[in-house]
Image (cartoon, rainbow, N blue to C red; front, side):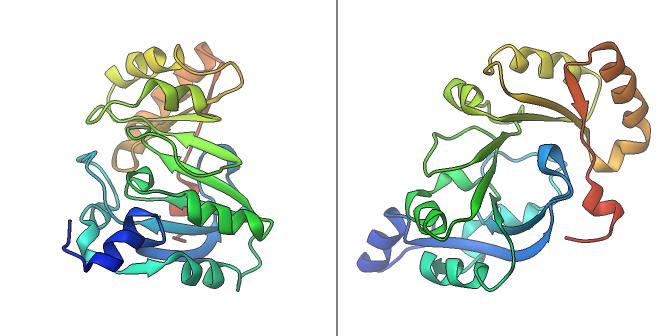
Length: 213
């Protein structure tokens, strides 16, 4: 972690400054909220380390500027978005209470995308937990999830997905999503699995088909 002056360190620890890799208005491309317009706030920093991650440039938080949450919120409000997605990286590495409180005050819905490896902070209308084998999710986060989205990279991931589906709440939506580079091979297997196990649904990275961020 970068060395900060004392005043900036205090603001960072309080969640008033966050390392923002990018923020942009787009269409949610995967999971339960696919197809809805949403403003994405992608925070830098992640120690989960998925070798197939498609945003590895987010891993090192020091590469991304610290921005005040007021600046981030004001920029988001310039758009017509009624939903904000906070993602990463791993966003729960940071205190998200101030950011989400400011966004809530503006009347927007707030969605979280997390690996579940860190404890919850902030206020969200929808929590998507996408657990990874490289850093196990917390049980309390699995039980908090509105959506469990498991990325399938090989056949053993089906059993791994089932193990975690036993730890969620009864109202959680279940998704299996092929890892993008292997989707041509894995999608038929996922389709067959979901037909045999209909508690699951198929998730696709539709934003990649649409060629949008």
